[in-house]
Length: 197
Image (cartoon, rainbow, N blue to C red; front, side):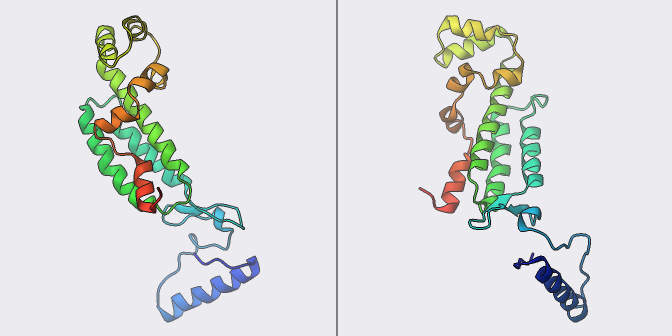
């Protein structure tokens, strides 16, 4: 990835670099993966750039975001009956390494959004894990929900994904709950790696 001011200069530099690589170093340049283009239209090792010329930022490429979400989705699939502590362990193993690599990005909001999405998927798994209405009522009551409210939500017919972002689960299975159960925060990890207070 070589960035210059104009398209014409880009063509000239691309040709000279290609000649050097192929003639001097005796290596082959993959022309299908090589191009003269705007930085924000290209991706490299999972990264791309914002279109703002005055204040360019390193961003996560769309394919990279799709891959991390697919991995989180696989680990938090409610069809896979594994204990919650094992799900959290698998998430931590994957996401700690992932955040270490992608801490170069200048858009912390993506870490915040992935944190929120991961917690929602875990709430969905937890709701499925509780299975029976009486178990849900018991668990919600133990988490401090008034008995009448716990009975009302425990017997709801709303789908798992919808209930996972309900006020009742957002306030009981909140950030502190997951932190106390060992889930690592991507946003906290990002701040640590970027030395942000």
